[in-house]
Length: 263
Image 1 (cartoon, rainbow, N blue to C red):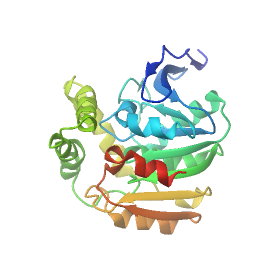
Image 2: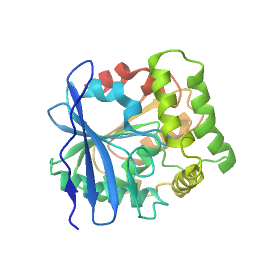
Image 3: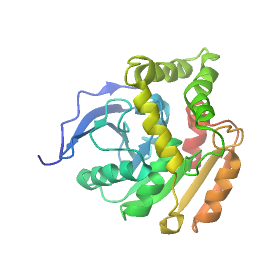
């Protein structure tokens, strides 16, 4: 079976413009659900673990004012799945490398948060389809603490921070977490296990990244501390770092800050 893109579904109205949904199916039994919004230069947006692309609705909406935003759900999260053994960022990157090629939009700006950042590093190292890389509180370095503590910080502590909020953003994040983790507890352990394996394999080929790279980091990130950002900055030749107020998920709460940094 050849790779194919289905026709996007009927638009869902947002504050500005509209968002369209589609599905990409490859011969490796991989299905990628993705959303498209806006016009202009293509921007591929990769989300973090435990959530799906729609958790970043406000980011997608704002960025679509300047770019054609393509925001796929990463396999095992949201509406995407695969039969591939995704126990490393590299395997995910191979899937998205084919996705980009088949999408046929030319070079893309690659923007990625957290777990998506680990995939983005591998993707930027393996393909010439990336014109610019933006890493936001990115995975890539193996955490120095135990896997048990990592699971707590990613899947429980981060979400508990949003429980204290009473706004629509907090509700959207919690709903995304419910869809991806709580809705089907039978497969949640598998999702978490795959995520942890990828995180602890990490990324090593920083010398292969030769595109302009912007590293944006929340100063109060307890999951991936600012030291990680500084290490990445030292290892990628053409890179610069920007520290912002907030923790690991700052962009979800302050989408305008990210938009302004990418102008």
